[in-house]
Image 1: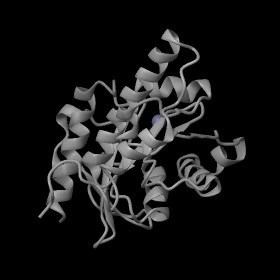
Image 2: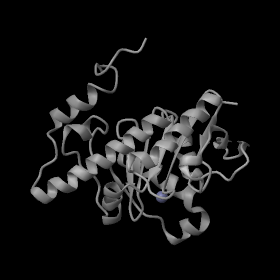
Image 3: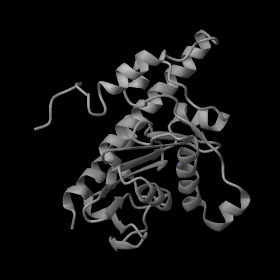
Length: 233
Ligand SMILES: [Zn+2]
């Protein structure tokens, strides 16, 4: 069932330690087949190097396991809430990558300071609040997803234009068209966070990118007027 989806999710998870975003098992990637309403995610605690496509857990959008023998990632309910809220997204990556997590732990969002950030995120990557004791006691992972969705809704941020978030005291989540694209956005977020931290060390008065350059870089890659790369046939 859904062999191609399993293979793509397996490959994206296997890339996590190679990208330098993840040590130990501090990360997971998922992807969804919207036509079937089934998403796949890494099993909990499994070494990325030993991961096989057959290990990928398949679940429906009620959170019920439909195929797989292992326990799904402990973050599965966070992924589920994002898929339920945002039908446009096809993949999600969660890591504790050092620079992006440093911002999240410091309570800082990530303004857009340059074009490499603007190629992936149309503006500031926001900081989402931490959960309350009651939310954690009730259902930590589910309420993490709901807090992210609520933040984007209240702030009027389009998750397709800003495919990532930093959660206070925690770490980043990114998403994208599919599993691999969500991982690319995690890599871009980590590099952008690293460059922002370095830039602010060099010049604490560094200003965010002007709006016209931000728009140019994001919109040439995304949306109806996009022209970057090769046309898909
Ligand atoms: Zn985490």
